[in-house]
Image 1 (spheres, one colour):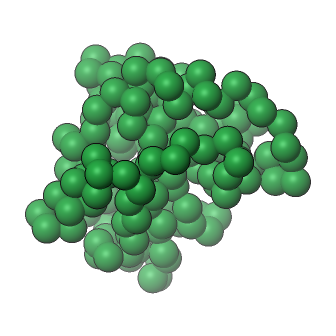
Image 2 (cartoon, rainbow, N blue to C red):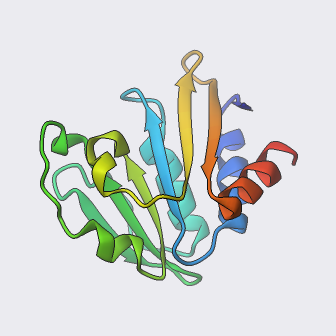
Length: 149
């Protein structure tokens, strides 16, 4: 578990995470409403060099951005609860971009077999903990780098 006490800590975590990412990486973001999933996504996007405003894609479900380092796909699958609609997710997961997915449990059947999962737990108004789970050797390396930094 990674302890996050404030937005500065989250910024530092996002930069460490981004420094480990490469083209094609998929990050699943879990946590309650207001836990900080979109804020973390915005920070990762900025660290990838995205200059456009990154906002929640709740109504669009998927937004794509070009960063200076890598492209960035931001998905919010909250509206897909109780849906089995495939919006061409494979195209995004197989792209040379970093993909961050909020509410990924609603598209579980479409997810790739390997990914990094970050679960944000709210401790109080400012403090959070981030649980990191990894599927696949590449993501295990990222997890170890983040937890032992």
